[in-house]
Image (cartoon, rainbow, N blue to C red; front, side):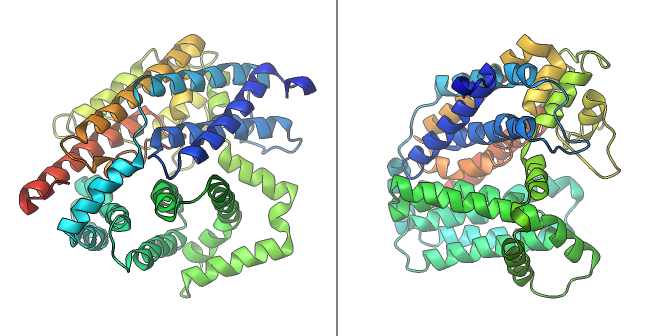
Length: 428
């Protein structure tokens, strides 16, 4: 890229994206590469998406890059590299074979455990609406234990483990189509892929092809998602959600509209988190002063102080910070996050924002190392790591959302592990 006169930080950023993709593919099946997945998602949304917008003549009327390419990349690329260094300062490779051996012993000694988790997750999903709204987050976490049960089942010698795995993922896809929200399906598909790759002993090239297929599926979903929502939400659709998904996907590819520049631009709008970060760089401090740590303190307060002790504490979702620090109004009921990169700039500007991302990386790396050390007490705890990091790996959420999820999910997971160990007398 440098040889073709590309800007320095853009060239470094795209090279870094390429490295992360190849490194993530290398680790799949051998490790549980959740920290690497977090970095890869951030690189795709903070670097690749914005770069595509900069080099594309056609841009969205609102979701475009608000500052010059050299200014934007000179902040985001060093910031993400600082996060990378922070994460890898503490983390050590954990061969998935160590976890698999512990999980195999557990499922051999207590073969009903995976089924209890799977059934429990589905049951909790259907009874959660009957409980107070204050418990919604707890039930949201608990409903996801079905995926943990599926992962445990992969390490067993049961003949029905793959039909059950496919069934759970298919039900998740159908539920996503019905709601028009595909985040959970894609997150759990990616988070469970390393375990699938390990069981099938996928070669490097096979994993690479599988990731390309996954990327094509994401492109397809992004193309048809607006149509799905129009039909399901507004048309009182009574037919098969899966049939609707297949029909619309087939129509998009056969007609070729999925490959048109307009459609590609719309898809990049969904990938590009950089327009929000650049909007914040354009707005702060020119029109809104630096927060100087205010959102950080607010996030810590919201995470560590129970709501009954502080009824006015901040609510997750990002709407308030987005409007304040981007200067862009949102429709009623719409929420957008400013991301950790955007929050770093909104609080501290250039150097402080890079330092903030580095410190967050250190914290994530330390926390991952903490989970690795706890495997002495709970040998299969890293199987629960996807649940703990489910929202943390997202690149569009801000500190309040990711820290709140990380801490509360970790508390819930440790409580569940303690209860299972105490109730069933098993080493989990």
